Image (cartoon, rainbow, N blue to C red; front, side, top):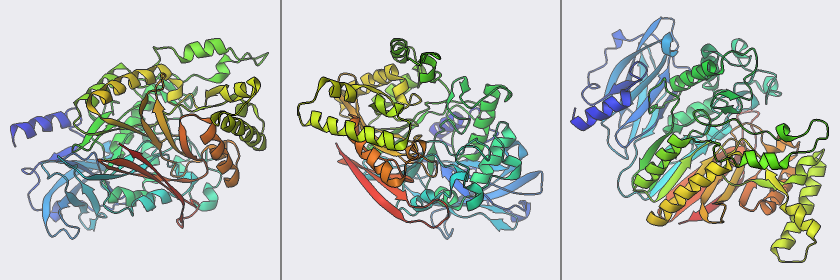
Length: 564
């Protein structure tokens, strides 16, 4: 092993030697001795992840009656495994929930590989993976997904994404699982469509055993297995991998009687690292998950954590409303909202990100993160309406006024005040942390002016599709944002009890009323396909028309192009 490879080995394996096996060309060459393997079954498919130009994580999980399982694995250049590049064996047991992760190193860049795991009398499904490119690259093609709630429906978006040809990577932006119990959020049709949670995991998940069992249920979905087998994942958590609206030392859905939050968070993180094909940058006991990936000189992908390590508790409008008069203390709210000390990324991560963008040689700087960064300031009036019909009527009226304003037609002072009276749609998103967003924009703007690097942000979390322009407080153009719809989780149409036609009307009105919003879809589940070339970034939203069975069609596809 070269000095460089040995140094890389030590860096990658530090703090995680007991959970992640590392294979180099010297350690993964011996022929498999099948009689030394354990009788196992592979109920949860295979996966690959965190690709580098010379390394890949490959993953599986075994079911066995034995206390310890020894399993073989193979990596080949062809799907028939006639040219095996690397092979080896690895043991697993209940201490890591019988999961297996191998960091296969010293591979060739921009190369397609196939892999599988082997038991005494069984083979896993075959997975496809690809290392990252180096040098001049013409195109990168990636799928972007988030928010897959098992009881809410079948993961047809994953199934369709797995059919994409020549896919380089899948970005999963969080909410890979949900913590809620049966009878809770988005479970009302679960029994009807055959998506109940297992009886021993039907409550809210809190312990390590709970989280492990929940991943095991999700990983039985055929669409999820297919997408994992189709391309390597680069993943990051959002809140539901722990619990709803998580912040650095608590969460909205961590309540009295549920024990210590940090203990619950540690259990959630351990299960996440066990069940996802991820290479934790600081070891598998550390919650730091932010990291970068370079796709030649075309693209640098920076995966961020806006949830666990630094986020201050979200503000809530209800905390600023007098219980008797119902009047809101706007002055205090605005002061607290714009407090420069409020953090989402935190100083350390923001400093790391600025340095990573500065040192990158790539043209496109992509931030893979959870929550919307676009300023989503919506008319205050819509939040005071009592029903969907009233909301739609107000939005239609305000949109007409705004169109007159944009056309420089005469409007009254009262009308102008109505369309200019705005409030953040979601205080759990970047709108709830505007000072840090401006700090980030200041850093990115300076770097882009110096080096002509272009910023693209991708987001999940809201369960709906969005496209927006990122502008700082002075109106300077910073970049663009593309947000993926949820795989199954219901979106704004459910919050406002809208049918498809009503949701389309709301989307049309919001696109007029929200200054930085260019497109939204509020009525479909699906995924986003992102294609990057030197000249442009193309976002294709693909929506499925059904999640109540595995039959579906793609409907109302939409495309946005951002030209360099």
